[in-house]
Image 1 (cartoon, rainbow, N blue to C red):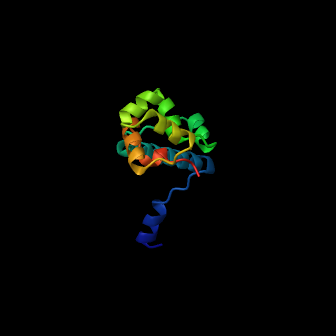
Image 2 (tube, rainbow, N blue to C red):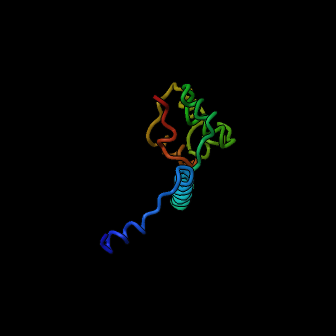
Image 3 (cartoon, rainbow, N blue to C red):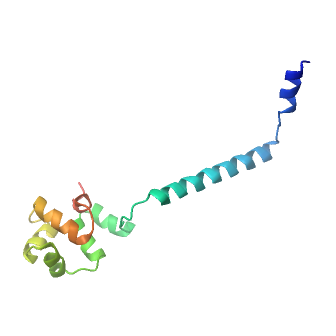
Length: 122
């Protein structure tokens, strides 16, 4: 046998199945930890709704109302913060008026969310 073939054979390790599976789990755990660290390092400081509130939106409730209540704001307080009439905000939340882009922009700013967060579920 050549010296090169002997070296390759000596460099080969064959673990048992249990040891192999243990090593795979450790590698997967290390990859998960790395991915978690990357996600934390690149995460934005974005606010998310709890699942129960998301379900309300998916059931047809207007996102502006859900976010307003999540922020513990009254209709009057949000209307004032957004620079609009309370009645207009009420009509948006109840679906009687679609609301303008300007209104959604003001509501998003007052609630600290994006306009996309306020769009009704379709």
